Length: 408
View (cartoon, rainbow, N blue to C red):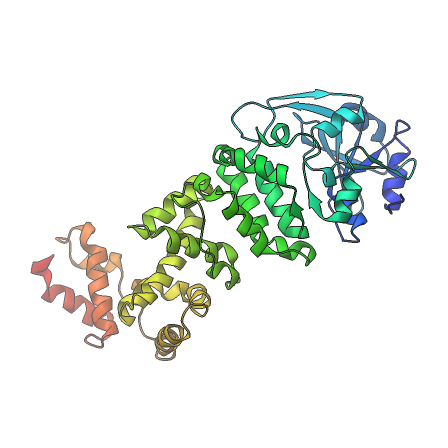
């Protein structure tokens, strides 16, 4: 079977008289007439020798992962990810990374470490022929996703492979072979051992799996997570999530988080989200804070928070919250947006920074006031200015502080 490869790959194969192979997603995509620019190549030549061979050639080489012997080979706009044939040994913690990597000269041994039959099809560039040890071409044509060997051996030590299985099934609209699914459910607890950053990467790929080739179904992928009872290994009490908002929002992660909150019903929203985003997604504090603010603003609107208090808290984040509310309540969206536009049109002071005085003015004029009270004082002034009880002028604001000095 012939698969088209670029002229650069054909030129590169001349440096590999031992035979150079394309393997994995690129081969699968070509068989399905899908576009795929992620090109993985392999041969029995180790990374050090490849680097020597390509020195001074038209190809540039960068080390990508020393432990795995992975290289990034490029020419012009094309990039190829190279790894030599290898065997991998995993620990018992389900954390995805092999604890030991051994080189091999045999394609058959390299194929054993790969996960699914459709990802284990090799294309020999030198000979223009496929090497398909596990009948991956048949499974691709029949739209079946299954492991290339005993599924327990493939899935027992790697939680990431289970998430990848869900994502690929969603991306391609494939059905999961029953023994593979049964094994995934058996070892789904390995997901809990993955680093938060890896969980987040795979979760986001799942959330947008229908976008990659425009043939898949995010509903299918998310249903699989429920069928596997996977969510309890994302730190949740629930084994399944009631999906609604995730299908309506442009930012599907925000939609999913709302669905998680609606399912879990935590006592403290902010504490729950902070823990989930930190422990399960490894998000930085700043990014987590933004997400928590958007979702808190969404729920505070649903609870009918008063306009004034609402925009004191969420004015700068309204554009994001607006997009969430439109999928839940057009009435609330319009209600709060009317007030938001009113604030803008009348240039109302809505933030402490809008006031004509600041903490330095308080310090210079009122030495007796403790610095810990500055923010409270400014917030009280802001409230009165917003209500029209005070003019937003420096002298007026200082007079107001002086009048209430006994309270500070």
